[in-house]
Length: 90
Image: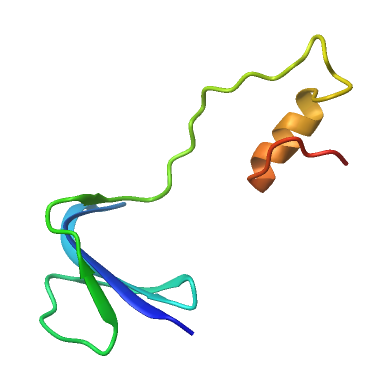
């Protein structure tokens, strides 16, 4: 499948902000190598100074409880959030 790498001078890691290249294979992060790579077999996308960071979840939510629980209540809304979906019904 696809092999892509993303290079940035500002990648946020648990150890701080570093210049690095993230290697992605088949949709998953395969490795992160610190520094800049001039050539590699992967298609490298250089984003310069743009920040690359782990996904962020917007904690601002409205759950229709009390009221309209036939459409969405606390249980279905939080299950949906955990699964990355809206309007999840079990």
